[in-house]
Length: 435
Ligand SMILES: [Zn+2]
Image (tube, rainbow, N blue to C red; front, side, top):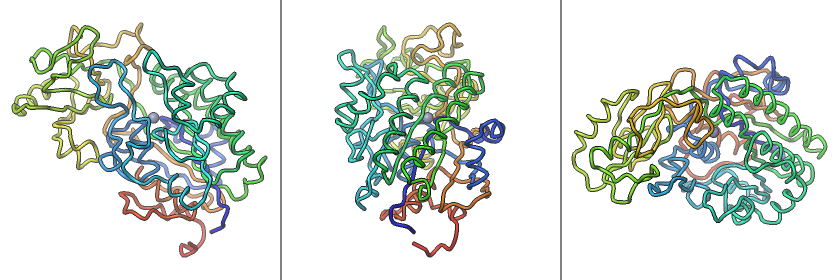
């Protein structure tokens, strides 16, 4: 394999297999990448199918119970807006970007989750203000490559409007194009969130979500064009992937409201919870962890939870761990399609319809993810294209954990530690003993 290899990974948040199966003809850039590359159609995600755990799997090849990012947010029941797992220090497994860094490769990341405080050469870390005394630039400065962030903000900050879409993706795309053109990093990881935001707000297959998909197709085109400007196109492999899909919802399940009624936790007027809880639900949207402290009545807990409308399955912490989720939970519950979980402790009912007038407010959604990755037609997808990749090939299925070892191989690298996934041999052109 060539020295000076380049890899560009573009994550289109919430891109599903169904999107490309049904819409590829309308997406000129993605369609040409599929035609000239290898499309792995159905990719089974990890449990829970959330953005931060999934993106960490994508670059470690491990399940959440091993890499440590078992949810988007931390357990902070007294806070309405808990901290997200922003910092790499919470990742317990070796990452693709550290592997590249160790081999003296340059790396760049644009809103890639859980990379704050990392050694990525050019990093705009995803981190947003959730405390009233912070603002976007201040928290990002602490977490990103400071000079790089200042430079990108100076050049392209006018494109951005806080974290609103599609302006945030405009800013990210412009910053990535600039960096690919001027710095030619060996490894570039870009996370575009436009379509995921539209799906949460307007529904999975809404006109707004479909418009976002078309915008993303154009952005992928701009990013590829930047490598042509930089003279790196000929030795760049491209990967376009999704992290999970979404499912439409219209009803919420408030397990902590139920646990408050049972006297297992103390509710607070603003829907948060005192620290003295003995049973606590911690949502992952389509599913929910249930944690216990000094609590012995697990049988009654399981029975109670199983009787709630909209709950599809209840599994033990042991079973959750076997499926790659948090081993420390007591139970993990899965919602039926159409339902999702909140952490709210003080609602009038346990199961409540989402009032359409509240859509866009915190925790009020038209579409969510976080479900069991094997739910019907809920899989994501991945497209490979470039000099190392077979043209005109399709592979029916793979797992999200297979992506990191495949990316390492595209860069001529190999993880030293054993991974849950294995590289997708079928995408590679030529003989396998080249590296
Ligand atoms: Zn996502």
